[in-house]
Image 1 (cartoon, rainbow, N blue to C red):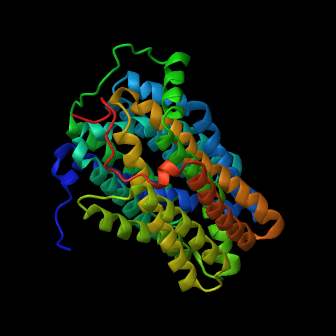
Image 2: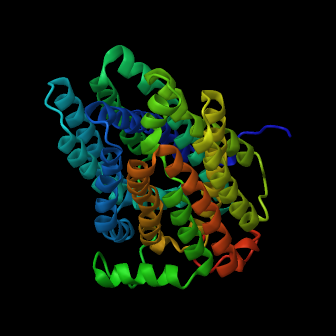
Length: 415
């Protein structure tokens, strides 16, 4: 297959955002995995790691729907300016508290929750902004490239976090993350003003506006079913917070190897996204989506049974590859079949599923690991993921048969 420049990157404004996100995500991923290690250093109780999930999901549940209405009622670019600045300040707070030796578990939970509030507003605005930067025909490619940006950052971030902790200390990771947000802020400056569509009967930020977004999703089975499956898969197969326990207590490796292990999923994800980015016309999207979720669950089981570093790393790489394919497909389905004036609200509801699944899953994994051990928690989660995919395929058969060339509802595409 002959390689070509992905069409989405030919659009200057999207390229700026893409590059800024890749740098910022690297810093964010450094912080996420460093937090897990930091908590493991403060306590050996698995449930404490699950507490990170609670700190993240509660703000998302409370503020996401509001964030979606805000993204559809106000300038999305301006919203991202604010959210990225808040996220940078919380990272700086973690750095200063750690550097001065005053950090404790409640500080980590509180600042993580504050950052999650920023994410609740950032996610809908940022994802809804992408269709305003590229034409509809390049949207699948744009989401493929966005996945590459996130996953490349997720490779570099965890890998560097291990080295940073080992040679510069825990606080260094948080300082680096604080600086990384500048990349997105600079990208937003270079992008300039971005036009977006506001509904003629826009109700602003209120319960009626939020209700309209929820009604839209409930009335679109092809969109709603992808959200449900996303939640089920990530709820059962989320074991990232258990990675320090697996690394130290099961695989018997140190912090540097932990960093590489943490990056394994993203290595697989980038490779898969690169392949998808070269496909000009992706078809049989529904079946490919379902298969990728089943593979995700199966690879999770292999990881839970692994007792050797190389096998565990490879299993995680497969989970990352399969998750990347499913992410690209479900994001394309949702964005291309949603009118611009509803994209923020649609994304906000999806964010509850997308963020809620893994965060609640981290709590579930921590509880199960507390009583039955980390390997059992991971293996049982992989089984739950596969059973969930089977249930979804039977309840919403139209998802499995979705091809990708079905007529798009009027008003759902970008200009």
